[in-house]
Image (cartoon, rainbow, N blue to C red; front, side, top):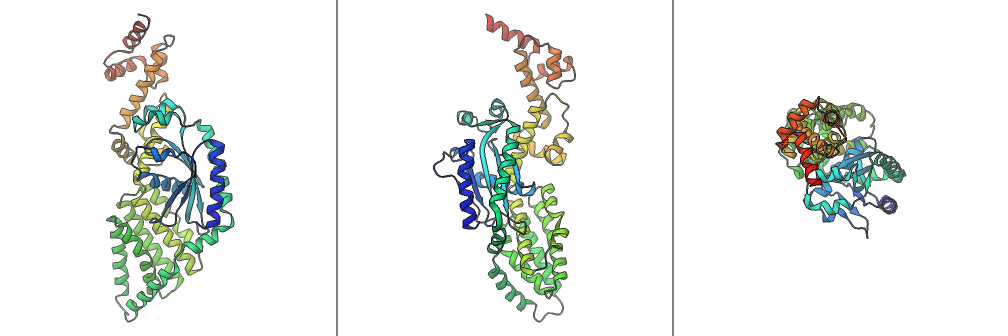
Length: 411
């Protein structure tokens, strides 16, 4: 980001941190190879002492900013530890994500629920000292935060766009491409097709640095092959993006996210009437594909798992189906099942049962609540089924569990 924008971010970074009593970060997304995250000076940074691998910190907040860019400028998400953050995105005129600001961590909802699912139980004391906000308050904070960050962006957007795109590299590749295509009446199409295949294979194989290096080279070859005819250039670029979107999915990116990025390509590309603007846009799209494939998958999985577990805990008295949970996190049923099993080691059905049993245990400690009422409030279809599942999970019946508690309490 340009210096003046960074200074504005630092000013509001302090305001939000002081007002809410939580950390605030500035994320500067220069490109996928050189993104940075800056904490506020003089503030105790919770994440510095987190016992989750530190390599996830930048990726976590890049994910938050990318999702905020996708969802109207703001996004509430969970880190791999299970703490909550709010991200607000900063974009350039061409729609490119150039940075963002992040608030957190804090606990959203009930503290005991968060501690129950804590990824690192050894951090219970540290997490217990974080601010606890209701879901409603978090929504209000996110709304105000994103509005302020959007205001911060101001008139620098066009400057950011111009500064972020490195024209010198493209010009160099144009000279090289002219030499390649100078004497070829035929074979140029084959050369271009082969280069597109090479770039696609580079993305699939996870060679991130090489894929980034090839972007300007690919653009230059498309321009020269198309003889700088703008209509032809756009057609070739759309073909390239369709192929790269599939390659990104094969490399490990989430299909729903990738399709969302690519579904408006035709509409977006028609906005541009200038070669430099078009080059900036296509470079940004390819870089976003690369970030999706190589940087955000792990964080995405953690965020999905915590969102699903949070929803289950808040709605365990309702009928919970795989279809319903998948819709809540915008994933296919099979993909959600796979991610949840991979991250937690248990199936969604097993986790739902676990949450319902734990809730029923708490209610059984209140002797004025009947078993039928407990069964209904914990999502079991009737008292008989509740008793059967409870005994299977704990080894004793709900009645014996309750009697044992009160017997030991008053012995």
